[in-house]
Image (cartoon, rainbow, N blue to C red; front, side, top):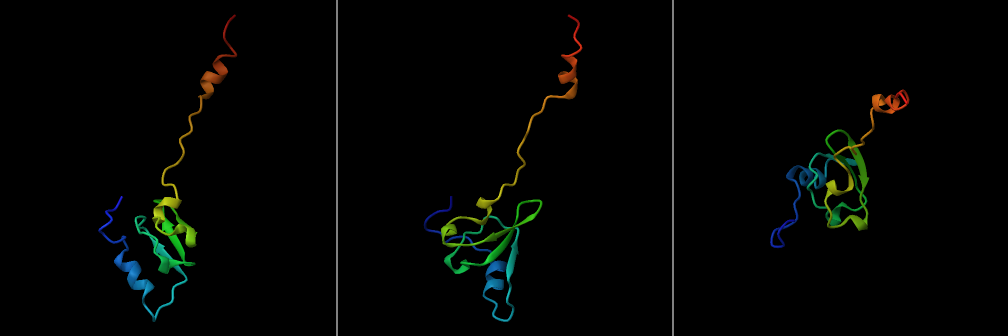
Amino acid sequence: MRSKKKCPFLSKSLVKTYFNKKKIVSTYYTTNRSIHIHPHFFYLEFKVYNGRYFFPLKLTTEHIGHKLGEFFKTRKKCVFRSSKKKKYASRFKKK
């Protein structure tokens, strides 16, 4: 958690592209998941990188104060399966 006396984190490249009047951008691509969502970013579309893909995120008023990375998982869910050998070995046991 960031200290209260520090301001929220915004990347310099994102601020430059957002406040650039000459170039209008419809979607902002970012790999930085630690950017705080600021009220200036309402109704903008971001593509946030989770380590494998860029996921779309349309910002609304409920997203204020959160970070961009909170809305996407970076790790796969681990699923344990029993192997086929164990499954079929129980059928052919001698009785």
